Length: 453
Image 1 (cartoon, rainbow, N blue to C red):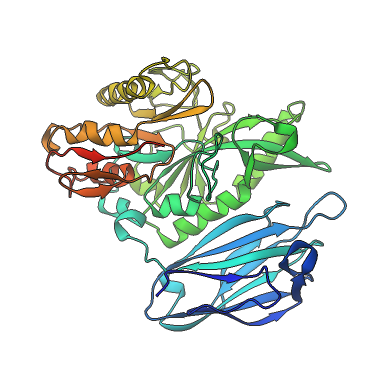
Image 2 (cartoon, rainbow, N blue to C red; image 1 turned 180 degrees about the vertical axis):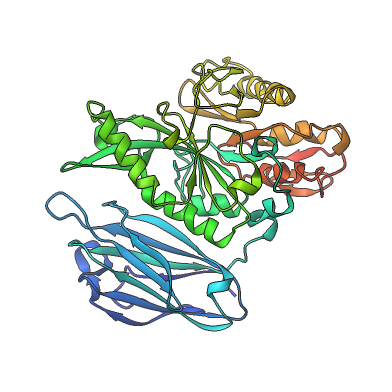
């Protein structure tokens, strides 16, 4: 059975797959100029049937686009699964096609036929769709629920967390200079990532401020630095936590691109706080325990000193290793390694690896070690250390490796590396194992094949 099945909506007659079909639609039709289908009227819907051999969770992937009417978009959608609401009022405000991923927990599905309905629930513009994909790969419990094995009393700063740098800079098809990932936010979370580094671009429509995710302010006016909308990213986190209540997601927020709107910061910050209030966020000046943050988004604030936007943190730019500046709204210490430029012309990768491993040694001295494991060479070429870092750990057996080394952020974190003892695995799986005495990877090993990006 094909585990990832696609209904192609670039044709007037989209064909069913082995498990996925479209038995009914209302207020929808093929749009020849855009080579896609559209939900054209409020109340219009696609009704899909998903047949499963057993009860299991799945990922639903829709390639969507919002239509533009008088310079703006307004097309919220609802998605129900077997008459239970999965998504309410999702409106990405994105006028180019993008992949949106929603995880459906096994509790909402059953063996046999399942009904999935996407409805245009309001507004005045249309929703375009090119592909509807169902991913039937069962989620790994060890990756989706790995925090369940850890005690509630554990301070979250004492958990070794795999994270992603510039988490929303995603290109699922090709490697580009300014993309950092091939996998969606949902895939990052189901794959074990628990720390998201989110960069925001401020948008203004009429008198309202909204937020896109972005990577820097390169080409700001042209939109080439834009990725998914911030509400859509928050929706993915909310859906993941709704299906995996043992977990939490740390989200670091930073405005990379004010997009000409920095003359009204108070209104921008109020709009951001109003948006976050719709989601299961938590913010505290104190170090929280795992039990206190399960099923929540823990906010860290790289924008200002407002605790409502997260525990504030700032540090020396491109630091090879230093303590984050003191802030009265944060009552715990953070050691940061984030040298992303100025690496040597020769040996940049080994230089960056040494910075990352040196930061590990700071874990006993600080409440959090925040460790960025990627950089750029000449400002464009990526420097990645995942394979070399796996090799660093493999030099010793589990008792001789660091037990606590903090939160480490990667680009392309799911790249696989081959070892002489344990075969192929990625750095995320290995970091997860470090929280249980490196269970499954206890012995020394050697990386026998890897090709960094």
